[in-house]
Length: 378
Ligand code: ARG
Ligand code: ZN
Image (cartoon, rainbow, N blue to C red; front, side):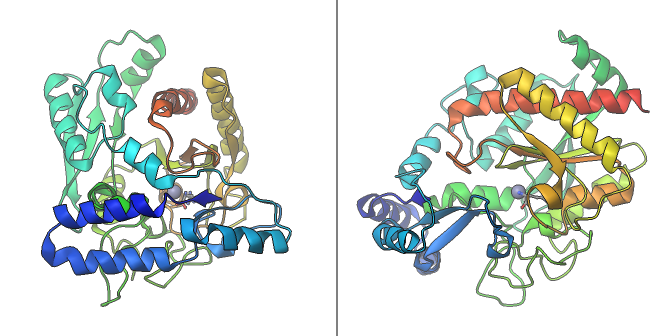
């Protein structure tokens, strides 16, 4: 259970946001604020009520002023519980102060979270500095008309032998941020740092955003997704309704004969997932993917001692149709994975910045393991 920051902090933040904010947006933001905070509990894990299972932990977030009554209710129901984070707002503030203090490309730059604007500047700079190694590919634009970029890493001599071999055989396409609008929103609206969905608006609904990982054309909007615009797992009005999803799907379709593996990175729960997530049935490559996911999890353990659980999506995390991994797999990209990165709930979506680097190192070791397997099985 997570407890929100004290009222004073919230009030201070609200005032700050309003003062800085455009006055015409003020009313809308206030109403969003109220809508968000009127809810008694906001689920973190699993993302929707239907996915709560017996004997599994549930992580949720509550308004500080409701904490005592919620605790009393839990006690009455004899549900074991503890407070994981006493001051969510305080953690958010700490994580969003260091946007540009470190020089881009310096190692400490990669140990802090950055805003979307800063990530755009970073992309521009790295491709300029490493023009022999990196290209920036424009693949479309977002609902709010921000550009969507994929970085292509090409062969160059590396100090790391495995990396050299892998880059000799493969190009890597990396998309740092798919939800550019949603991510920008988490920085510009302090009480919405945990926004999940896109920022599109459909059918005059009062609620904004589609869950991009429910919007791919893979058993779209079956059990595990929602047709209601106000839900966190809203699947959108039709598959690929989101311009960001459409851009990624088109890019992958256009390159499908050369793409050998697809990996998408999420947080949190420390898992190496493979298809399917839209059904509990096994895919035809289940055994191979399972053993590869196990190898990837072992590589992670060797790197940082962290335990990641390997498994098919629907069995391991929850039933979730319309995900990019299942879609890529059914398109013919056999090696398709979702990494759920750190942690397992201590900080949940608010992973402290000191954990960014080790999380990247362990994820990289898993990527290498997968790439080596692909290379041996070409
Ligand atoms: N955190 C992920 C999500 O809810 C889990 C996705 C598992 N589903 C999948 N298709 N890989 O989007
Ligand atoms: Zn996710």
